[in-house]
Amino acid sequence: MNARPSISWTLLCIGMSQPAAAQSILELIPFGGSYIPFTVFATTETIAEAPQGGPIRTSEFREAIGVLTGARLRLSLNDNVKLQGSGAYVWSGWRERQQTRIEGAQAVGFSLQGNVIQATGQILYQPSRTNAYGSLGLTYMVRGGDAWDEDKWVSGTEYNKINIGAVVGFGVNAAASGSLNFDISVESHVYQVDKVEAGFVLPGNKPFESKGFQADLVVTVGIPISLIAR
Image 1: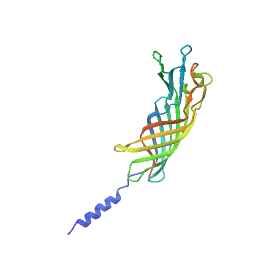
Image 2: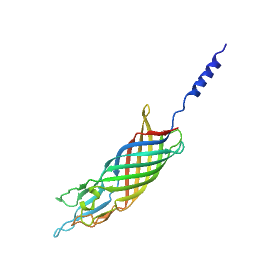
Image 3: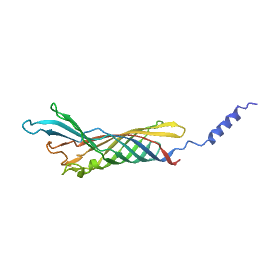
Image 4: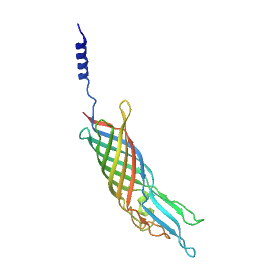
């Protein structure tokens, strides 16, 4: 008697009885990472007194590279499209970088510590049969701390502490071992705003030149936690 049909039927029944791998509908993703500002937000020149006269150094002001921590909520609409909301706290102020123009001039940088609170809303697209995704959305930023406190700097200084911009990102879900996964993302935050409205520079300096276009890079690593699965 040929036992092959019965063996095949048994294997088929076993295969049908195995539950399908659960897919997350709603995930919480705690994360940490780096905040890397790319652009200068203001420049100025220090002018020597007579009889020498003329600029003796150039100063560039930019936000400092910082660390951040936060969390995301990610909702799957289907196998390819997801919605995501994120919040993060960034430890970052600003720093001055000086370049001397004449021999013997002293270059002394200055810095103040501060923070940035970020909130983003994004739509994600993940192609079928891949663990990579692209994202597009909006970001909302609020700056604070000593770096963005007008009373801690030159009298008459006025900052733009709230910025709204666009976010373009790329990410990947990388399996570590067993059920442990890492969500790794790289995002570019771009916005058009003068971070300083008035004042800001020390006496003896030219009025600052404000740079309106700003671009920041945010790199994060998170651990997805499934809240609702199917």
